[in-house]
Length: 287
Image (cartoon, rainbow, N blue to C red):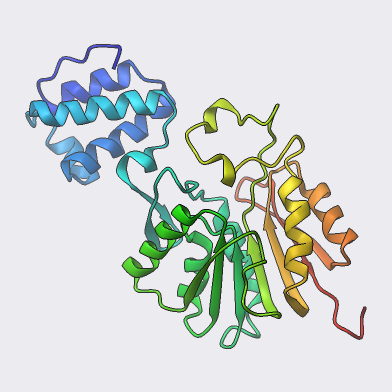
């Protein structure tokens, strides 16, 4: 780290680390300490006089430098809380956000009548967050998870094994192309939707995989490809749910409408911002 921290005790290291870091990193610094030293929140305070060995301070110094360079904390500790579990994450996967839990809630609300026999697909699964959340809530459902990145799929498979979730099958490929079935009751996706400038992501996201984030100049390029691909695999009456940016609801709903989806709806996140748009494939009698 460019600013020197003199190391004596946990309290002095923490105070100096917070002093040279932006306030937005203070909570992450505490989590980094807890993870590195194996402490809980209470011990972080009660053991403030704990001496720090040189090898530990090197690890912590490296972590603070990374945080100041906007490396996500999840990449430093190797896990990220999501839904009811902790997921392993790597730089090959997007860090699951709390906003994506809205996508899970919306999907569960559409599964009430078919949950025991539902066939679900998660397109662009990344670390497996959404697929594993749905599978854990409905262990009798079949969940198929797709990603174009073999490295991301490897992480998702490890998460499934670690959580002992057995009703998810993983497939490598482009959107719905590798799915083995023709009729799914529900398809969910958290696709790339970040607007890019000359193909570049915002600086704050530069450490996360471009494949999972970049959505073109208006953020909708991959959604334009996703919707017809998913439509071809949805059963009549099936639902497609898409997470998107808070200014993209009108654009996503317009794409869904253009491909014949009905019962269009947009659901806000916990901050009241548009976050998930969904539509229903008409039944044969409605078409």
